[in-house]
Amino acid sequence: MNEDQLLIALNTDEPKLSDNTVAAAVVVETGEPSHAALVIRYNGESRIFHFFGSILLESTKEAVDEGRLIFVKELNFIPPFLISSFVAHCELIEMEATPKYGFFYNPKSFYDIHGKFQNPGSFPEYLTCVGFCLTVIQSYLVNEDFLHYPDWDHTSLDVHLERTAFQMVEIARNYPNISQEDLEGSVRRILPIEYFCGAYASIRPVRKAFTDSFSRELITEISQRVA
Amino acid sequence: MSQGRLEIKIIKDKSSADVDIHAMSLGAAQAFVILFESLTKIVELTPNNKDVKIQITSGSAVMAAEGETVKKAHEEFDKILENNSVNGELVEQWRRIQKVFTSNGLQYDACFYDGEIETPIYSVLRNRPKLRVKFNPHITFKADLEFITGKLIAVGGKSPNIHVEVDGKALSPISCTELNASKAKAYLYQTIRFSAWSKQTLKGRQLTLCDSYANEDSFEEFKNFIKELSFKEEVEALKQLHYQTRSYLDYQEYGKLRRFLRLFTNEGTDINILKTILIVTQSVKNNERIKEQIQTLQDLFNKRFKQLNKKFEQK
View 1: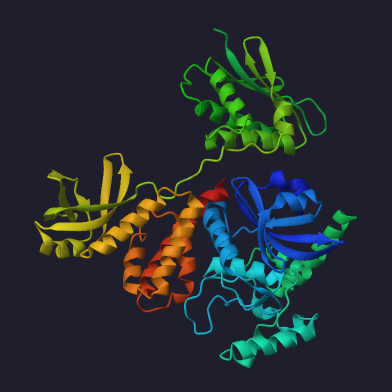
View 2 (view 1 turned 120 degrees about the vertical axis):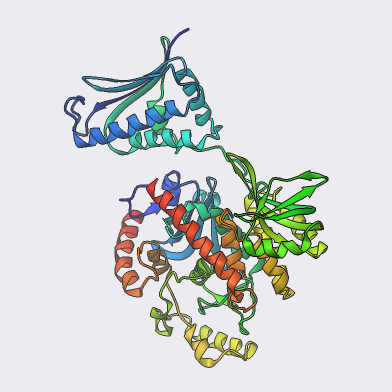
């Protein structure tokens, strides 16, 4: 892949990607990077893995044919020699997990409330498309963090406040063992562009300061590509 | 018989000046080095290459490989174009050439010759998507774990090993730890069931003791599981491994899980197997009964990761 190229668009640059690769992706709609995904290339076949109300693991062909603009950035901490276990991980999640849409994301959420064994595919009930991608990456990494999650606290949530409040009540009712503190601690909103930015960082866990400054550059570049 | 020839030329520089081998720009020299190295490797990777001569022509930057065998290299190249080659190393060399042709703004030409017949390949390489190795469904573990039932006939040695006879025939000595050897002594002249990692070396197949089983059920269960895996495609095999590990966890059979994990606690274990185990056990990795075992697997993973990543980054 050309190292100098900041943005790799799936529809025009796919042949430049390695045959075996895991990449963070953003889908750009009406000029905005509005949706987060993972793009997995295994033996030269690309699939997109994302959460869109339900979990989808599908060939990228359809999205590209529809003219959807998808930018990808390889996750260099999941090198090609690990591709088969990453593909297995995603296919297991696709089969096992049933998240709902919402703004709760706790990176350690694959531990259940009793700290008992839980399949990495069984998610907390409420996720965004970003939370989904992060959980997939995080549960694959096992011992390290991709983003520095405490940098994103409840103040990062600026939309759907009422809905979130309603969901908090619902979670508190269904999981009485979760403390109010823990629950509040898992309210956060990480934007698709912030997640995408994380893939460019050379130091992990990625701090919000990095994504804040670098996302401006990326957004400018994206708007030029869209124009 | 006509001669075969593969010729690659750097014609013009970025500034459109003719390239002269006596005074090359940095860009032309860099391209030259990669192309020449790949040309040499292509010859090296073509069998029976003794007749091939490699030449650099002074004046313009022309390099060539000439000889009967170059026609074989041409046939292999056609296979690559049809996405029909499984020779990863060879594809890699052609890819490097393709990358030079498509990326650095100089003008090139490349041809295969069979006697007088010329087959230009420059535009073919420039205009097609990245060359690829034919997908070869990869089976996770060939036969690097063996399950053996036999009579223990000797134990000991300076480098400890056990000697086992199967159907009256002695296997080559199976290396083990001192601890295993002293435990094994109690079973001398008895029939034992055990698993061993096997490794092909120059001296032939070498076995290293993994575990022994007093319980026939566990022995059969593990044996059948490993056998089943060997027929599966890699990703499917890893999913099977996930479910098997999970079933021990679901029934809290930690003792059995420990023995199951022991099968993979070996330097030779595929890194994707190690990763899959670490993922599925991550929420119980601090459980006293399997903690040590998981830590050992994590250490093996870290070591393998470092080795493979180093190789990958050098590429």
